[in-house]
Amino acid sequence: MKIVKATYLISSPSFDLCPKLNLPEYAFIGRSNVGKSSIINALCQQKNLAKTSGTPGKTQLINHFEIISNSVAKGKQDKWYIVDLPGYGFAQVPLAVKKSWQQTIHDYLAKRTNLVVLVLLMDIRHPMTDLDVQMLNWAFDSNLPTQILLTKADKLKSSKVRSAQLGVERELREKYEGADHLFAVEPFSSLSGLGVKVLRKQMCEWLD
Ligand SMILES: Nc1nc2c(ncn2[C@@H]2O[C@H](COP(=O)(O)OP(=O)(O)OP(=O)(O)O)[C@@H](O)[C@H]2O)c(=O)[nH]1
Ligand SMILES: [Mg+2]
Image 1 (cartoon, rainbow, N blue to C red):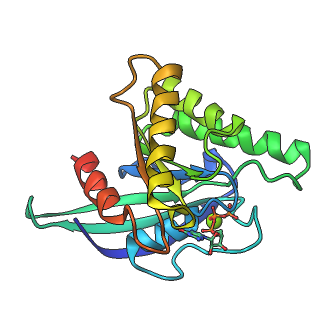
Image 2: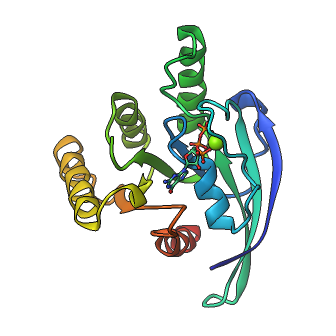
Image 3: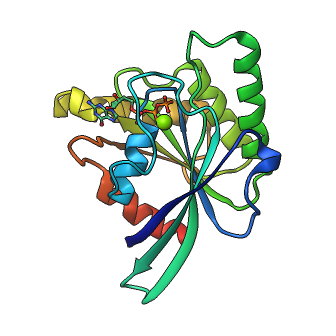
């Protein structure tokens, strides 16, 4: 799959204000500062498509991007959305705001019927936080296929990368019996490009 065009569409403060459900959609979610915007940029090969920042909590809206991709193998063009969801777990945010984000995300996961796959990002050095598990529970409850990316893998030696991946896979098997078909785990680095090709290939398969 080759992404031929990626454009920013709209930022919505709540689930009700999101674009119509007319195209398939992939949502990226994870703790604030985990590298969501960087992954979207790496995937689309555009440096500033999604705004990245050193300030956690920058993305507080549901951001839709419209993507046009070509599949050489299938000889066709596809149109779909990528969604940059608000980051969670940012300590400096008031409790009421955190609660409202959680509600927005829960509604989004439960009701956005054009959602094909959830891409859940976890820092490879601190995976499976309570809020990550909360997202996994919601995905499991909605029977929503979830690609887990262990981000910033460039920060660890390759042996540690492998053991982190195996650890998360083991925990998933223990927590969600019989859900092997729903969850997949890949290490990722926007900096080195590790995992980008695998993710593109995966996305192409999911589109069918
Ligand atoms: N070493 C390393 N740093 C990364 C990687 N991806 C992102 N970063 C850095 O992590 C910080 C946050 O990246 P963003 O892509 O803005 O993270 P985000 O999840 O979109 O953050 P919010 O929108 O604030 O929730 C930035 O300083 C990036 O440069 C990576 O693969 N490796
Ligand atoms: Mg962001």
